Amino acid sequence: MHSAIETVTLPDAAPSPASVRALVQALEHGHVVGLPRETVYGLAVRGDRPEARARLAEAAGSEALPTWQVASAAALAGWDALGARVERLVARYWPGPLALLLPGAPPAHPELARDGWTSVRAPAHAGLAAVLAAAPFPVVALDARRPDGRPCLLASDVAEHVGARVHTVGDGGPCRLGEASTGLAIGPGRFEVLHTGLLDRHDLLQTAGRRIAFVCTGNTCRSPMARVLARALVAERLGGVEASDARLAEFGFEIGSFGVAAGPGARASQHAVTAMRRRGIDLSSHRSTQAVPEELARFDEILGLTRSHVAAITAALPPRLAARVALLDPQGRDVADPVGGSLEDYLACAEAITAALDERVRSWV
Image (cartoon, rainbow, N blue to C red; front, side, top):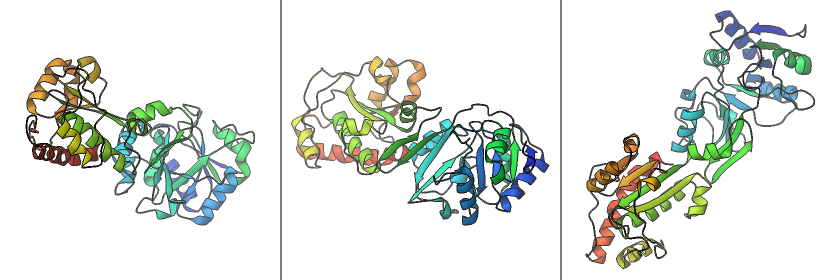
């Protein structure tokens, strides 16, 4: 170990209070500190001091936006950038090798944002988590790298290759995963993998997005209207993107409709087409699809328009999928069938569907 660097043992387990205190004090004084993570070693400073962030950029040889290291997702409380997509990603991958670039800034730390975005991650390293929890200031970090660009996977790598610019190193032994985290920018109109790591884009899309199916009887009015109305609401909440199947798929969303007694290939009823046209939505290309269990099993949520639809779907699916089935209206009301009625009946049906979707969509996007 480089003789000028203070070394503190910081295992990926319960660290000693003295070790935690020594590292917090080094950060408190504005020093650059090498810290272990499950991925690669990081160079860290307190994030609320501009001069400390400047030292970090010099030590890491990078002008990249440093990532706010948090002990847990609780640090994100009150941040407007959080939505259902981010909550699903955090629930699945944190603590872990996923850094999120989110719009805006955490309320308590606006200084962490750059150009309207903040990078944040909860590393899966118990020793580091203890340091982060004990620090009364935000801690930001950049990856510690060798001159050839390879990441530092040992405390001795940090000392050898970054040594003169680092005050203290927390020695957690070899990094458990040995590969950099994945960076994902997620916000209005944006779902972009910034740098690849242990997680791939497909898995991130599957987690952040949602596959939603609407089921009625004949799949010619209620569930087709629910599908296109839901597409429009989801597209709006994604940042005003185009409400097309292809565009929504770029954010991990698939929205389908089916009928428990549908004859394949039937067109949407004319009143349904007219009701949607009045909302600026084209339903003319719709063709009915039967609700078969094998197809419904692909969806995360299967929403029946009435309780009888819910019962029929639940009976047809394996018991393990029953939790995915629910009534569209969270208030427990059936959406009445407008078949055979006037255009006003279809317009009223669309209003009832929209009211239910307004409550549902917050849990999707």
